[in-house]
Image (cartoon, rainbow, N blue to C red; front, side, top):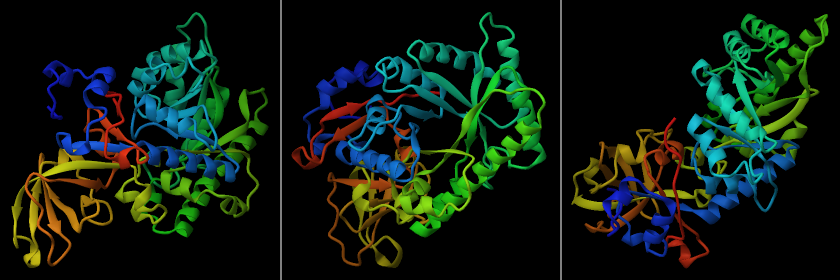
Length: 431
């Protein structure tokens, strides 16, 4: 069990939002059983509005990645803000895609465009088709990523068995040097894939999708801007190759025009601005779409890029001090034991080499085991941490941290100074 409550054990094993709200809304953070993840809804919302503004300033549409929080409530905030709104999302799992539909976000018009964010697997084509049926009933569309000719053939084989056939809208996933997924524009692999796509009766080329995962190494706005420019250049180059290939074909082909050039990661998305757009020297062979996912919550990794302030981080983990060791650490520094370890934070350490920072106190989360962590004082003469006291800790990677928790405690910094639970968000679990 995760939380301290008199609610029946059955609720804890199979949580439902209404029961959780009744059990916890109005409670003080100090009364929560730890470890517990807390999200400030106001900061989350402000971060979403800020990203909408970035996309608008940059002259791009925006596609929100849902993988960090995986919730209905968070999705609404990502898509509708005081700055703008969008209807396009990216999902990492089939469960996310299904829950977007089943939660009513498609029926009420909040989501109209879902991109499955991995190159399409053969064992998920039928499932994706069923999802598209659900979307289509409300005027929506399912889009896919491809980076290998066989993925197109999977779609062709599937459509050959259907009474009513259709063309799948696809992005070509581009490898901009990160070697995570995708093909390199101009390579033999890219040309072979493009040839199959343009001649296929089962797909429609929608655009080109890049993700600068290496941009997380940025430590300045100028560095992030360079990564952003590189992202744009590589998808733009892919679009140029595609237009040349189309001009050489004798038969008419079906493609989306103009191509959608989709780029972004949270660091490069933060670098998007009117000034950054002016630095794009090349003529674009399509229209820009910005995508990002971590930005509503943020973490120490994002703080290391220097593109955000600590005050923008909307999530933290609450942990309880369960033991104390004066002078045990390096150079005689004090250490303390907390009831949150690798399962609560993941083992990501990031550039700083630590697992987390205690909010408002000179302590860091320096070592972790599965279920407990070691805090080390950053101060030569710290005020000792009292056993039984709770601390808030910001970890390295919000996406992995949230995956550990069956629900999130929501606060609002405008309500009771953010010290009381105002809502519960239950994330979508599974693949």
